Length: 149
Image 1 (cartoon, rainbow, N blue to C red):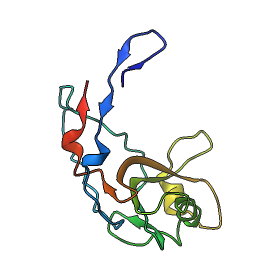
Image 2: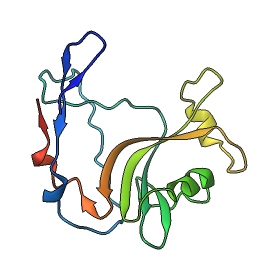
Image 3: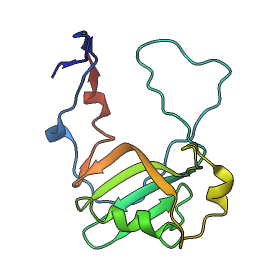
Image 4: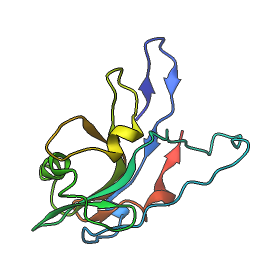
């Protein structure tokens, strides 16, 4: 698939063969840690994610339960009940990786507000940046099939 933008220039697209991915169940997957470096690497093979100053969280929906995990495999369901409930809309056997973030009045991340967040209030968001397992298909193992054009 070739994507375009308003100027008509071609954008990079990605190809992934879902049929080649292996089957797996939905369970906690330990997230990769960030590596601090003095200078960003050069080259088109690098993909960057924005750090939002929140808590890393893995959302898991199996066929019988939904759990929002911390990066240390702790259950976040009670602390972030609204997010855990929203994960119920995912298809069964799905795992997503993202970050729970509290936002200030200007829409900027506010770590202090997140650290003092009460589950009875609103104001937190779950920014999802990776789909790790989709309906039982392990998308991590298929990354060698992900090609840039």
